[in-house]
Structures are given as structure tokens and as C-alpha cells.
Length: 157
Image (tube, rainbow, N blue to C red; front, top):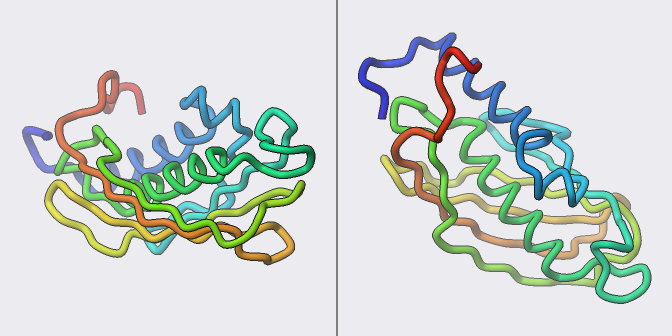
């Protein structure tokens, strides 16, 4: 937790930092090709292009890749509107996934929104669709935020 309240400008700088970090600072997100299309307190949209490296069968995403996108988008939705006076170190503590259809060979898009904010525990709903609009999965992500993320100081923002 911060020792003195963050100004609105400092809060905004942290949100910008986390948006960029989600795309370029998290090696696993880069490996999966995850990019941010939208990042605001009302929700986020993350995009993951199809790759044979993420497939279960030729032309079909592995279910774990889709679950990864759900986890990543749920955490992003929480951080996009988070009050950083309550910390910046995020950990997923629970996640449920319901697969609705095979994600076949095209880009998938996750829309996530934080549905409940607590002091430490936050919940996000996530819907994943193929770029064509076909729903492939939905999920609920529960995260906790507490303490400061290692290396995150205002000097680094």
C-alpha cells in the first residue's frame, strides 16, 4: 500500500503503465501474441491471434490458450479501473471457464469488465468471441490486490 494518497494524475499514470505492461512487459502475453484493443474502467478488450503454437489440433486454439486469455483479460479489467491506493500486486486466486464452441483458426477477442471491487478481492466477467462474433468461452476471474508490485515506483512510470 502507498504511504500517502496518490493524486489523480499518479493514478492515471499507473493505469497507463499497466496497460502497456500487459502487452509488452509480460513475457507470456507477448508469447501468446496478446494485444490490448481497449483499456478503460468500464472494461477491456484483449486480442489474441491464432497461431499453430497455441493450437490443440490443426486450426483450433488449445483450450488452455483460451483460458489464458480469460485470466489475462479478467486481471486487466480489474487493473484498468483500480484504485492504486490499495496496492498494485495482483494475483489470480480463482477462475472458472465454460467453453461454448471451438475457437477455430481466427483471432479471438476477450471483453472483460470488473463486476465487483472490494478492498483486496475483485471479480471480473469475461466473454471470448472469435473475430467473426462466434462466442467460444466465458469465465469469471477472481483476483486479489495487495502490496506494491516489485519495481513499480513513480520514478519508473
